[in-house]
Image 1 (cartoon, helix red, strand yellow):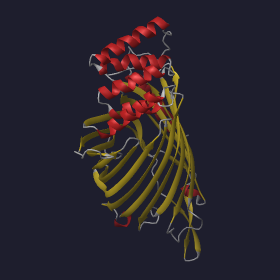
Image 2 (cartoon, one colour; image 1 turned 90 degrees about the horizontal axis):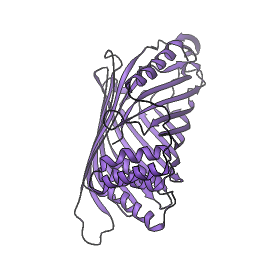
Image 3 (spheres, helix red, strand yellow; image 1 turned 135 degrees about the vertical axis):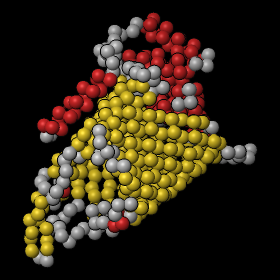
Image 4 (cartoon, one colour; image 1 turned 30 degrees about the horizontal axis):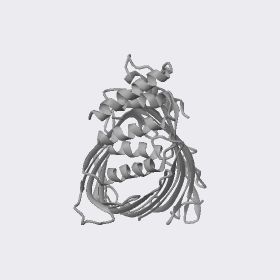
Length: 416
């Protein structure tokens, strides 16, 4: 890693710790006695049963921070998120709790809660704010490349910028659902939904500003253990304040849930691409996604996913097929920490490589990501801090397209 980049990463961590404020502490708290655990749990239940689910969430998160294996506590946390209408959080906790030591009637009730989440009238929103390195995050093996001009080898040097700045990333989403009337005896519960998504990076100047605004909406069909979604979608990307690319497409997704805590899902998406900068980067893209995940012991989860992307454009360096196989998980270790590691391998095949290349430009990649959350430390009335790092190595027979990349971010996310 280059010294300047390492210095920026250190600055990111220091800035994040400073954001915690003088009153925040990451020191391990003294373990609670059994009497204190019971008292805190009863306080949370009282708040939950009296219609104050938001007040029940912090003590329940604190208890799980002390001992992530408390299945009953996690079950009540899922119910508190449900009552607070934080549907995605509730869904995540219900998924984890399915693998705990539960009687079968309770498992069936948990599946009913998940079905209710997917089919009910609701408004859900989330936000994630982080410090990131905006700009180049790649270290290429070389900028020198040999090109083939009419059978003659011509050494050349690529002019690539490695500049970067400290930036602020905001990821937020808002989703509205409205159930539709169904005749008695209908198998599925249909509903309409609309979702807005924003992913923006704002640096000191406008050079590295990057904004993606997306919208999707359509039909969701919910059965006792399945959810199927058919949704048109659109997005617009702006780079350095200028309109860069627009997409319009259609997505079909399906999920199957099992009472053991096993979830299987898949999705297919087709998109038309309209690039406002270069006509040869306009075209279409097909993406397939499959995932299998399972919760373990009422406190952790593990899964595997496969993504296939086929992009068809005139520009040879974008006209490619790629595959990524990823293994991921979530582990809560106590003291409020949750670790979310993943490792992946991938390949990228260029369908129409430029005849200028004297070697095969196809890419092979391997990498790993790690996200660490502190779920029992509450900031700014409902946010919790996290840090994430991702590393990737991409190899090509064209050395100038082989590189290492490192992404580091520290931030806060809405927890309740």
